[in-house]
Image (tube, rainbow, N blue to C red; front, top):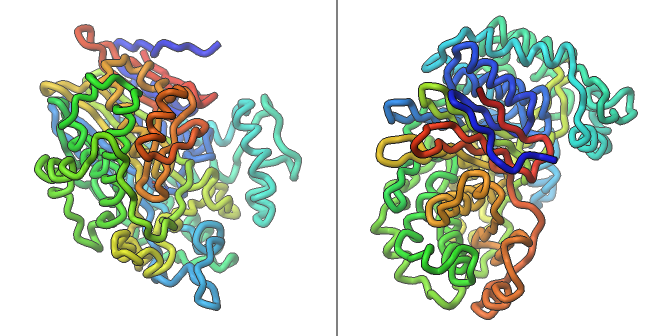
Length: 542
Ligand code: GLY
C-alpha cells in the first residue's frame, strides 16, 4: 500500500518519479550539498534509472529560488542543429511528414542537459562536480533491480527500438525483454557518465562522446555534428514572475511557454470568486477552461525562442491584459475556438519533473525531457544513452496553421540553433517573502494546465500538498476545442451542465505526474508529495 500522506522532512527533501533517484538526491543533501547539487545528482541518476524521460541526451529547464528570495532559471533546452531549416520535415513531394518530424534521426535536437547542469553547478554548486555524477556512474555500472513498471515499459518499447541495434542491446537481453527484479546494467552509459564526471561538460560535448554521437548521426542521416555539440550553450535567464491573490509565482520564461501561459491564466482567474463557485463545480471548471483557452491561443500566436522572435512577455503577463481578456469571457457560455487548422505540433505526454528543497530553504524545480517516452528510441552506439526527438516541438511546416492568422507558426519554426518551444512549467510558489511550494509535471501541453489546476487547488482550494497532487485535473488547449477531464473530476450533473454551456467534454485517463514539495506553515517541515499516479514516484528526505 503506497503512503497517501506526504513524506515529512525536517531539513531537506527530493521528490522524483523514481525512488532510487530521489534517494541519490537526498544523500547529496545529507553530505552537505545544497538543492542545486541535489538536483544535478538526481538528474544524472534519473538518466540511469528512469530512461523513459530522465536523460543526458535531452534537455529541460531549472527554476531556482535562493533562501534570500532571489530567483533564477537555467535553460538547457535542445537546439536545432546548424543544418536545420523550416522545411526540414517535408518529404520529397513537399508534403509534411510526421515520421521525419517525430520519429527519425532528423527529430533529434542538440542535447542540453549536461551543459545546463554544468552551468548551474558553476554558478551555485557547493559539492564537487565529481561527487554529483559518481552515484549515477555506480548505478549504471553496478546495475539495479528493475521495478515492474520499468520492466513493463521496456517490453512495450522494444519493437519501436528494433531498427536500432544499440537500443535493443541496451534495453533487452539479446532481444528478450527483462523481467521485473532482474539487475539492469548499462556499461556504455557508465563510461559516458565517467567522461562527464572526469571532464565536466567537455566530457559530453567534446572528445569520445561527441565523436560517437556525430557518428551515430551520420549513420542514420541525422544532422548533428561535432561542431553543433561544441557550440551548444545553456543559458541563465531571468524567471517570469506573477502574483495570484497575494502569492508569488516564479516560473520558466521562453523558450518555454509554461510560465507565461500559467501566469496569464492565473491573472484572468484572479478576477473571479473561484472559492465561492466551489472547486470542480460547473462554473469553476467553465471559468478555468476559458482562462486556459485564452492562454493557449496566445501561446500559439506569440511564444517561441526569445533569441529568435520577439515575445511580448510583459504584456501577456500583465494584470491589465488579463482584465481585457475577462471582458470577453461569458460566465455562462463556452467561447468558440477559431476554426483554424487544429494541427498544432503534436507533443508527447512524456517528460519528468522533480523538486528539491534543502535545509537552508533553497528550492529547485526541474522539468526535463527526451520529448517522447524513450525519446527518439535511438541509443548512441558505444555511448549507451538515448537521444531526444525534441525537434517535434517545432512547428512542422511553414504556413501550416495560418488560415486565420491566429496560430502564428513562424516564430517556432526549425531554424539553425533555435530552441523549440516547450510547455514545461517548473514552478515555485512563495508568500510574504517565504518559500511555500515547488512543483511541475510532465505531459506535453497538458503540463501548463496540470500546474495551473494544482496551484488553484493549493491557493483557492486550500488543499494540503498531497491532496492537491492527488486531485483531479483537466485540460483545454484552445485547439482542438475539447475539454478533457480526469474521471474523478466530474460528476454526471457537472458534465451535463458543462455540455449545456457549450463545452465539448471528454473524460480522459490520467493527466500528468506532479512531484511537489510544500513547506508546512508554522513548523517549516518540508512535505514531499509524489504523484500516486506514477508507480515508482517517491519522496526521500531527512
Ligand atoms: N517536450 C515537451 C515540452 O517541452 O513541452
